[in-house]
Length: 205
Image (cartoon, rainbow, N blue to C red; front, side, top):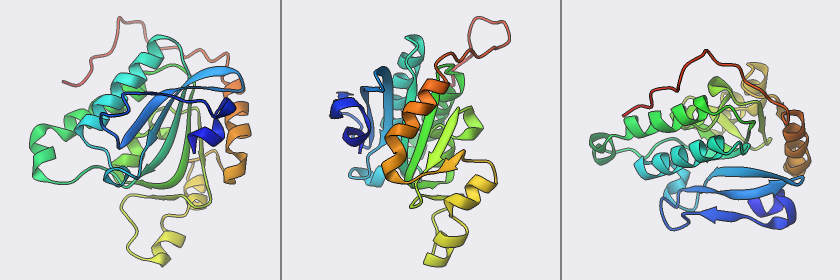
């Protein structure tokens, strides 16, 4: 998908062999450099785990340090379940990823392509953590938990319902993704986000 959206299909991936369930890298959109963060459903079903959360948090903070806009592509059913992840600190790692997105003052654009369930929806640059533009494809499923039936997908997890509730700016066709992202990036080009005077936030440990 990234290859169809970015300029010339050129994408420079960072750490491709670590935490493969989350893709991070650099590309250009409409001539502007941007950082890309995306779930990879081919690994762990796109679920976030400790390594993916740490990888994403580090990359988001890197982009924010060098004033690179962030484009987040969401397709995740949430976090990897199990005692091993819980005992190793998945909540702490997820908090770091959320903190990184919250603290970033660069333009932040999000596209939900398929699933956005539970905490996975929240931490992947949702409206709740200051995304500037949030789009979804008609195939997107946005819900507090994975739908248990086709009826739930149509009613409870509908992207149109999420848009009515203010979680999305628009529901767009996949073919519109590139031009809409370029237009949104252009609209955010002069973004300046005022914050209370302080040195920096205190990242979760």
